[in-house]
Structures are given as C-alpha cells and as structure tokens.
Image (cartoon, rainbow, N blue to C red; front, side, top):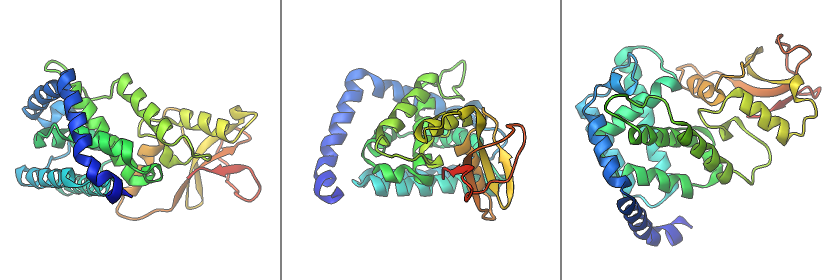
Length: 281
C-alpha cells in the first residue's frame, strides 16, 4: 500500500508542507532557532551530567536522518528513528557509565537535533505522525516519535535569554489531541497509548471511562514486577517509567495494572483471576 500510494505522493506532500512553512514564516523562524540552539552548550538545553555524542557520532546520526528523508514509508522512517534514538541512549550510557531515564533523554535528543541542523526534520516528524499506522504507535517507535516531536517543539520555542527545557502547554495539548485522533478507534487502553507526559492521574481517568468504572475513587494504577506491587503516585508518568525499565541492561517482566484497592494507601497483591484488576499493557 505504501509503495502504491505514498511513493508517488511523497514529493507532492513534501512540497505542500515546505510551501506552508515558507508562507507562514515558520521555516525561517526554525532556521534561526536551530542556529541559536546549535551554538549553545548541552547544559543550556537541559542536559544534566550526560556526555553528549562527539562530532563523529553527530555526523553519523545526521547521515541517518538524511537517509530517513529518502524513505517514503512512515514505518521505515520510524524504524530508522528508533535506531538513531537507541544509538544516542547507548552513547549517553557508555560515555557516563550510568543508566539514564526518559527525563534525561529528551534534552539530549534536542541537543543532537540542534547539532544536526536539519530544519527538514520538522516535516519528517509531521509525515510520520500523520501517516504511520496507528497500531504502530505502540511501543518504542511511538514513544521515540513523540520524543522527536518534543525535541522540535523545544527548539521552536528556544530563546536566547531562557532555554526551553520543558514542553509548553500548547505543545503538550497538541500531542494529546494528535494521539486521541490517531487512536480514536481503539476500544481498550494500553500504556503504549499514553504520551511521555501523561500522568498516572490522567491514565486512571481514561481507564475509568473506558472500563465504565462506577467508583473510580476506589481504583489506582499499579506497577507489578515479579510478585511485587507498587502503587503509582498521581503525578508520575507511566510511559517514562516504562521507557526507563526497557533501557535497563537486564530484562525485567512488568505490567501496569489498573485495579480496585481496599485502601489506596496500601499495596495488596494483584490477582488477574478474581476480577480485582484490569491489565492495561
């Protein structure tokens, strides 16, 4: 389907997106912000402690982005984006000899994107976000795609006096609206459905709505790992927790479970067979 439809349309879509950016002035603003962000140190973009990729690695990543631009399939583009992001993670960990979580990755990705100095990446992200099969938004590919969007949003909002190290409310709202629109036909939620910035409180609200829970105040979201159960605080981010668990060198089986609890301050064992919990991953 991609070969029949998207291959002949790719150049047309690129011209339309480029013309829109030029006419709106967004492309010129992005070029200026990229130049400004490129001149800054990693710490100015929110990188805290991690050693960034060197110039050789940056050029290697830039070449991968150039190859991504030649692809017409959004699936293949996301697959290459995933490899780039994993390469950045590996460099961060090898250079610093420690593990990094999702909160550390977005600033580093922003720094790398700025160093690559490719304004075309903005339309690449839009292309993938709108044309990727919604079922492929699950898992790491969807997570890193939203991370790439977040990196471009930070650069677009970068200012000389104050680096944008946190996504604006407008960018967050855009991500939420996009995700609801692209996954509107799914009936049962998964942790993969939620963006890196979605809180546990928001996840619980959605689960209560989807599963038609009459007393949502008696339910909570838990992280289940090898017989242990940990209730997640309302302001935590399940998708970031998931990304951090996946980044660990030793694989660990875990589940996010939305379930009834007798006392919301206590952690009690989950039992999938007695109906007291709903697995959402």
